[in-house]
Amino acid sequence: PYREVLYYNRYHNRIGNHVAGLDPVDLKFSFFESQLNGLRRVALVDDSVRSGETMAGIARRLRQRGVEIIHGVAMNPLITKPCQYGVPNWPAGGIIENGTAGDVILKLGLDSLTIVNLDDLREIFGSKICSYCFGGEKPIAFSSRVYTPPQST
Image (cartoon, rainbow, N blue to C red; front, side, top):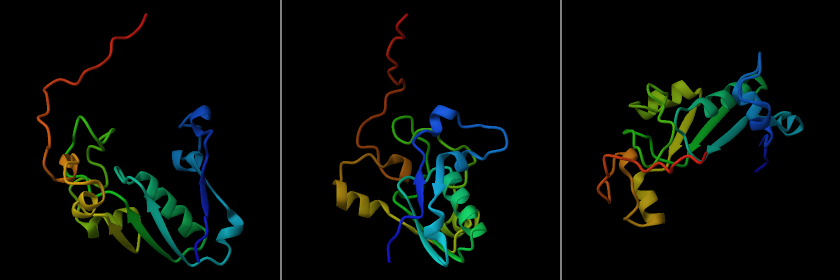
């Protein structure tokens, strides 16, 4: 049966991402502790896995609370190329970069991982999506400059 076991703390940006002694994942998410009682298996779904820090941090915390089996679901293909137009905050040397699915499972602390593939994304959104960072083609020519609006004084 489906049940939510964690929630996003919408105030985490107001208190800052780095509070002494607290991991950013602890600030960003909290658990419904009553929903975790006796829970042995969890499917952890993330809309966008880039560096893997969030999913790995949540998986660690679930294991600390007694969850035995964690299945991850990444709703984007693995990122293979940095891109100035799409995925922000490219994780240089991050968990997802240049890893096989097996490597990623181990680094994220999961028992298994389902990764949405590029063909599935194209079926959902059409073939003209930009998929360069996922190993696909560039549907447009990228310019050498990215426009930055002027700063108001």
